[in-house]
Every structure is written in structure tokens, then in C-alpha cells.
Image (tube, rainbow, N blue to C red; front, top):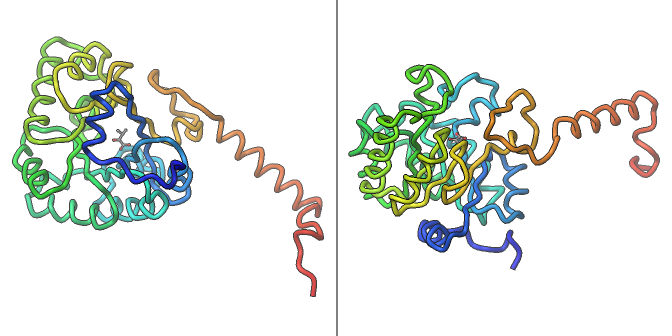
Length: 271
Ligand code: KIV
């Protein structure tokens, strides 16, 4: 069976993989084109992250993402990757206004093709998380650096460096587990803190800038492919120099057009 003919993972597979020590590989995607490529790959699951507001729309934070925008990207990814488990990100304030607002957003994302939703933090929206879970929608938590709170955090900084913050983070992770989350993203926290959380809770942890001890890893697709050359955080490994490759291809094409070397006869129709 090829990767593209397998059924998507289920929430139970996430736990099974973590329990057997098989790491979970997750990337973000926002469009059908890249989702099709991921669909053919061994990547386990796709996050349609609100980072799309930055990566695809050029905003400087994730705050401009809306439920409608996230649903549009989720639908595009779902069309391209029918064999992957898809997590739709709930955007800024969508789970902080009211239960009805939150459930409208969940409905948009799930009807667009997500298999689960992700939301940041826990304090103050415990009952909303619980309601989403009890409505039959798997929820992925997100702790540590939570970019929707960038203005309170004072920037994109490593979190939980102090002992008291690490203790609070562990308590929040346990709370998300209790509320029924099936997994948890840990973003930009010290490796030892992520290790302790992963050891303590029974749901899989997916790290980004959280060291090697989490149950899995997530990277923004464009970052790992070298298509976001200005972004070089310590945690990032780039597997390709896509910007340079695309630049070279555009250069070549432009030279061919200007030299009348494209199209050739074999690329032209005759009557
Ligand atoms: O929006 C996103 O891409 C994310 C990941 C960085 C975890 O939340």
C-alpha cells in the first residue's frame, strides 16, 4: 500500500504510536498543491495552522486569521490530502468570545474537512474545550509559546525557563489531558521541561522548538523547505533550499522567453 492509499490516522493511532515509541511527524499546509505532495509522503498528519496568516498572507502575526480563512485553507488541504489526518487551527479569539462562537468555528473547520481542531492555552476556556471534546471533535492542545498571545508574551520567546513557569506548564498540560485532549503541541520550551511533560501525561506531545523528547515534531512546511529564508530560529532544520531552486527556475524561464527559446516547436500547436 502506498502512503497515498492508506486511510488517515485516527486519534487512537496517535496514542498507539506514542506508546510504542514511534515518533509522530507533522507539518503544516495551507493549500491543495502542497497537500497533494504531503499526501504521497510518510508524514503522519497535517496542521492547517493559523501560521498561514503569516506564511500565505504576509501578516506579521497570526492574529488576522479568521474562522472563514481557516476553513478555506482547511478545505483546500483536505482536497489535496484525503489520506492524511488533518488538524484545523482555531484562530485568535474564536474560542474566547462564547461557546456559540467556538462551536461555529469548530463546525466550519470540521465541515471543511478537518478531523480535529487545535487551540492555544487552557485557562479560561476549560469548559469550551470540554464541550468540543464531548461533541465528538478531537482537540489538540497548544502550550508554551502561544503565538495568539504574542502581545501579552512580549514577543516570540522561549517559555517556561523559570521553575515556577515550568510547574505551571506541567499543570496546564495535565489539565488539557483531563479535559480530553488527544494530543498537545509544545512550542518553544526547554527540552527538559518538554521531556518531563511527555513523561508525566499519557497523551502524545508534538514539539516545535521543544527538543528531542516529545512524542513527535511539527514544522511549518515553508520553513523546513527553505522557502522562508529570513526565518532562522535555533530549532529549525531546513531540508531544502526551495527559494534558491525556485529563483533559479524563474531566472531560466525568463532568459528562455527573452531569447525566444521558449516555447519550442514541441511545445507549440500546429494547425
Ligand atoms: O499555526 C501553526 O503553524 C502552529 C504550529 C507552529 C504548531 O500552531
